[in-house]
Length: 485
Image 1: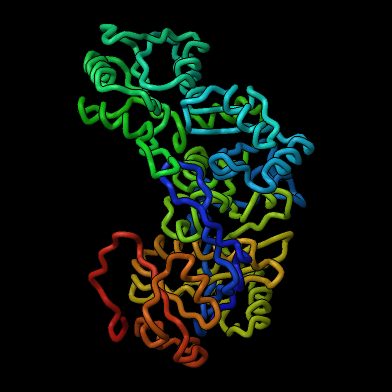
Image 2 (image 1 turned 90 degrees about the horizontal axis):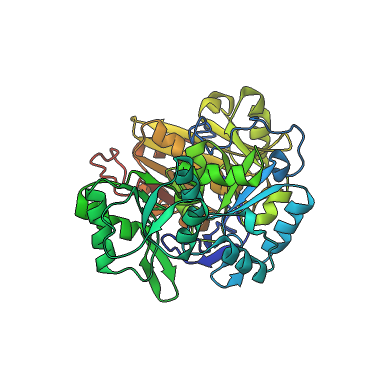
């Protein structure tokens, strides 16, 4: 059984899970101590989220040794806006103070947004209204990055579906923005979000693309959040043109694509960046695209349950920007030298500690200040059933998202090993697994037979323990474990 402890002390933040919007909403596993009550299987788990994958915690790459605070490992922080610094029209508590502290430490900053409709001046003004000190030159929008890309190619003429932000950025970069119902030809058709777009302009854009214009999108977000729901985003307008012409965009600049990330780092003046965002699909995947470390904060759209099925995992996860100034927690594959520390944590949590060393190859550990502060293991059966077990987090680290990231990484490891389902059982952490997106399948005896027969489950888990299962979204599982649910 596992005593993962309360990963995220009571931070079940509301939040709007809205497409394309940096909005809060963090389902933090909160006080139900995670701990995958899995009998007898202290299995080691390997740092599975693909240890070589960008954006995963790979301790050691150009990080100053002995750093006390997470941010000390980096010389630049690239901050998303909505969902990180504010939510719609309300500042996020502590965000302005965090930015001020970053400045005090001499960290290079960039405020990065996929929104192409506003000019850097307007974005900086909004940030200042939220109490965040921001210079115009620090704002890097998808409009600014698009202008950078096209200017580097020598400029030219551009027909624009978009608002003031992208139009001014292109002009300032030396491109000629074409107007009129049909300018005849253009070097580029540039598509951004446009709340005043008309059928006639979309028709002209499609015709220009058919005549040979290069099709460039500021970003591909399909929707944009509004108080009453979601509105069509730049990606929706882009789809009109690609569907009409049968031709995909030649370039997409915004997150999660690389151009915006590179423009942001260059304009920040730094060289060792940390990307901070609230969305897995844009911010975290954007960091992974270019191989940079990332911090996911649960003050916006993405929630702990989203991590389990995410295409890319963050290096770090936290409840707020305050984590920037705390010692970081690194998650990595366990080593033989970790066995004693893992066993001690399991013993302290009254979990079975036998066999830890035998499972080191399938175990992950969380480490802070060179101290092992968490662990999770994996057992594989029949090549497709994975047992998540021996999940434990040090009591003083519970509530800091350590369990959340351990579970996400362990699930990724299971998938990498060919598993098509991940099962767990717990007596004390049912709420945590609920929030992580696992499905309750019943009590202990609902587990697949191979897991049910392990000594740890059979001998140390009570019949009333809650059994959980996770399968990849949309997965069709034709096989069932003999004798199990």
